[in-house]
Length: 68
Image (cartoon, rainbow, N blue to C red; front, top):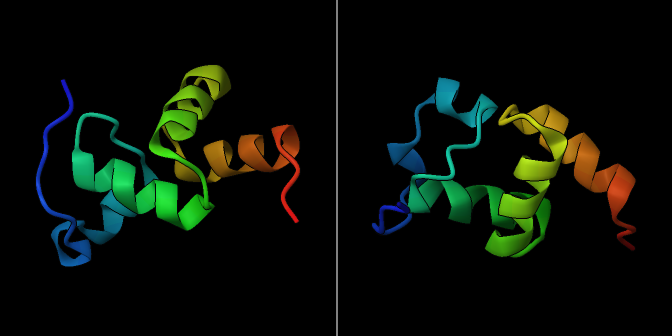
């Protein structure tokens, strides 16, 4: 279940910025904005890439989708 809370980038510790936690609303919002995609597409990318490591998910998104 996705926990809803306001987005506060200070709430994310530095180590949290290496992993995508789909259970935390602020994490989903942070990574969606960082990658320029919707939260739904982020969840799909994490599922299809098979990992929650942010760098690997970002690489998957770049390879799978064409961004101008």
